[in-house]
Every structure is written in structure tokens, then in C-alpha cells.
Image 1 (cartoon, one colour):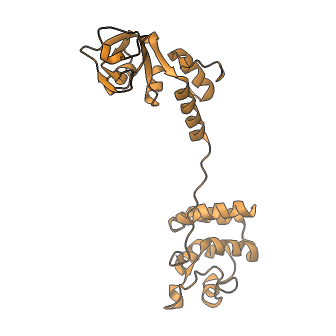
Image 2 (cartoon, rainbow, N blue to C red; image 1 turned 90 degrees about the vertical axis):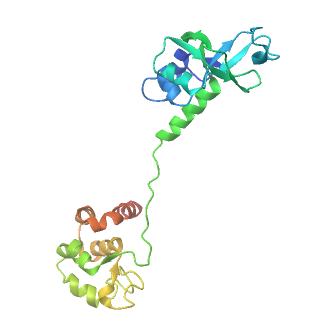
Length: 236
């Protein structure tokens, strides 16, 4: 069933069949209601309720929106009970007890509502862009002890000495967080992503081993997404 085939007011069966073509999984009346769709029932003009129909002397499509009424439908009732609706002028109206009863096959769903739901379901199913939390160059970083715990065993050089003597290790500030040694070198912080890239480039530490390191240490959890994103940008 195409959008063109979908009636202006679809039966429950037509609505479910159409949505099954648009979105995965079976559809039922309960799922239609739980998805926020409003069912309608056509009310023929009844002279006993002139205030409900107003000038709509041929009748009108009345929405079933009251929570108690829709919950009853979703729970699997054998018929439709409408205790509250909107009149022909779209003003909320409480119906005289016990309300109006109609058969289930009289329920209708508006085409525009079904199309809007299908569009929303397709948007929800689209892959969401990964939000990369970028570490700011302030006090964010890992300290020397953490650098050695994560990367010390991956290189043959004396990494502790390199950290102490090599400035940023890879030229200028390099992997060192700018301004993190204002008090002393022992307070230096390091960007592990920059550091790992440098170890790969200068000391041929395999990317696979570096990636495992990012997942092996809790203090690198906040940097793992940035590491993965950086590799993707570099095509590695």
C-alpha cells in the first residue's frame, strides 16, 4: 500500500498494514495508540445533542483522546467507549454517562497523522552522529604516572626520561597540555591521543596495541572516543 493508496481516514487494519511497510515490526491498535495516534469515530447527527453537532447537521469525525477511553482500547476492549471528545467546533465536550459506544471497526486514523508518525519513525531509525567529547586544553589530560602506566611498556625507550627531558616529547608543547607545568614539571599533563599518535609515528607502536591501551585503563575512558574519531579522520 502506497501513500496514494492510504485513505484520508484509514481503518485500523489499513493503518497497521501501511505502517508495517514503513517501519519494522507488526502494528496493532494498541501500538497505534501508544505511538500517540488519535483514533476518530464518525458521529451521525443526533438531534438529542444539538450542542455537540452545532451546524454539522450531517455529522462529524469525533476524536477519541481521553486517556481513560484510549487506555481501554489499548488494553483490548471489545468496543469503543467515548466518554469525552471534541464537538464539531473542536471544543472539548464531556458526554452524558455512560458515553457513546461504537464498534471497533468504526475507528479511523487520519492519513496526515500516519504520515507524520512514519516520518518520525524513519528519522529515529537513522544512525545518530557520534558526539565526540573533545578534551579542552586546560587542566584536562593524564599525568606522568598515568602516561607510564598506559604507554611505558609499548616502547623500548626510557619513556619516563623522555617525559622529563623532552619538553612536549614531539616538539614544542607536543603531547603536553599547554600551561600544565606552570608550577613544576611534575605537574605536567599529557594529551594521550597526541601522545599515542606520536608513539605510532616515531616509534612504530602498532595502532592496534594503542587502541587496546585506550580500552584497558579507566583513566583513558574519556579519551577513547576521541582516539577512535581521530583514527577515522586520519584513515587509520
